[in-house]
Amino acid sequence: MGEGFRQGVVVRSPFERLSGEERERLDRASRSILDEVGLQCFNDEAADVFARNGCAVTREDERSFRVKIPGAVLGEAVKRAPSRVKLGARDPRNALVLDARLPRVYFGSGSETNIWLDAHMETFRSEEDPSRRRRLAVFTERRGTVARLARAARLAEQLEHLDFFIRPVNVQDEDITEQNHDVNKFYASLANTTKHVMAGLTSLSQLDNVLRMAELIAGGKEALKDNPVVSFITCTVKSPLQMVDDATQKLIEFARREVPFVVSSSPQGGSTAPVQEAGMVAQINAEILSGIALSQMVNPGAPVVYGSVPVRSRMDNLHDMYGAPEFNRYNVDCVQMARHYGVPCYSTAGVGDSSVPGMQATLEKIFTYLPVAMSGAQYIHYAFGLLERTNVFCPVQAVLDNQHIGMVKMFLESPRVSEEDIGASLEQIRKVMASRQKLYVRFVRRGLRDGSVYAHYPFEGADGTDGVIEKALARLEELWSRPVRALPGEVKDAVFEGVPGILGRLREDAREEMIKEGNR
Image (cartoon, rainbow, N blue to C red; front, side):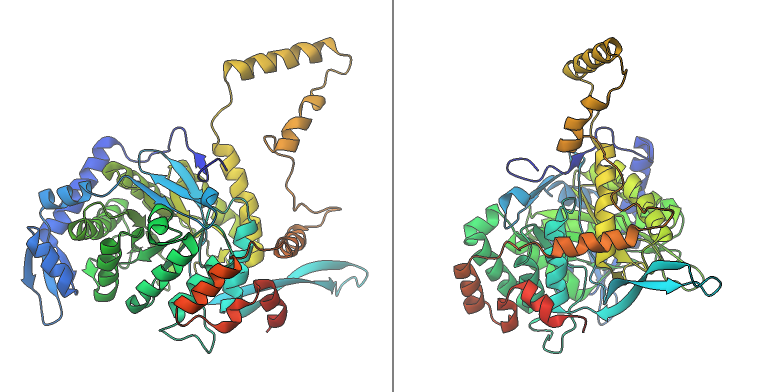
């Protein structure tokens, strides 16, 4: 982490699947979709904005309009989107800079699962040979709560390779309502991590309360503009090509207030989008561009991010299938399309279909981390702790993911082959060849101390046993035992006085809440 903002990892030569000609072809296809087929728009205000900006808008039925966006109108609107978006943080050194012109990669969490998966170790004895025993992980599903969300944020604060926090669990407490849902999920997150916090908004009526909370934490309205500690996600389009009412209204209000937000689309190849690469990418690109264009028609220059979450459909049950090779193809292509338009990209990696940590989960996660990060996606979400597609969050899996993402980041670092590096290496070779031992070991120690040399996998077992989960659990407990950087008392008081609906029990330190909650 450098001065001013987190450095992430800058990919020197981004991996590309599409040639320039293929990107142009997909761009033309997306423009053709929006111009000839159009969107079914269920939001009256959006239809009016599109009409006033040169789009063809006709009444489709009592609830919706058909909106056709000419290619020239689309292009002019998308050009107004900024190429650089800053996402702030409680600790300004944790701020992120998303620049479409620079493939600086950040990894973070997601995605509002309903299930929290705890793990503990038990000893099992072989039925065939009772003298043989093994320690194995046992998993228990629990529901998401505000306290568990606070624990997740507290863990995120300690994971050095996690750059931003999107809440990984939904809050389902009995005293959580639609009206107080947003303020409690944002407060539980902001109070327990100094990293950037992003989330969807459940109720538009709570937007001003969430922004009021963010202002108090950032230090005022102007301070929040300079250091936007929160940002939002809006899934404007329900695939295929249906601009829904509530999410579209949220987009309009985010744009008006100039708070950073993602226009996200998540079609399923084979069910809500073509399974073929060309058709999937043309459609999701059209869906995202329609939201970006609308935001710029509402407020030119509004800080918007290109949000691509394309997935494959599993054809025997129509569930999302993240561990498929097509998932990588779709996502890498979308990163290139976002770069084509000069808009920062919110992308997806680290999701698998396995329901518990293990070999399948590790394979599927690393299979997506590498190509998507190599493509230079600026903001990779879903990367920590998710299992069973996006249905389960498992803290010990997040610890494992942190280790694996750290290895990916290290791999992506730029080569160190400057004249100084070459000179130092030649000097080492001369010294070693002049020695009796002919070994380079003494030159490795400094790299091991400063982290520039990889030591070894920290969760490896011994004596022929697999100790990964047990060692990761020990690491998890150590991370959770660390103190949290709490909000200053006067800020906490101002938030509770100025923002209605926050549960009184959240005044307590998250660790105390963890102890009380135990294993309920």
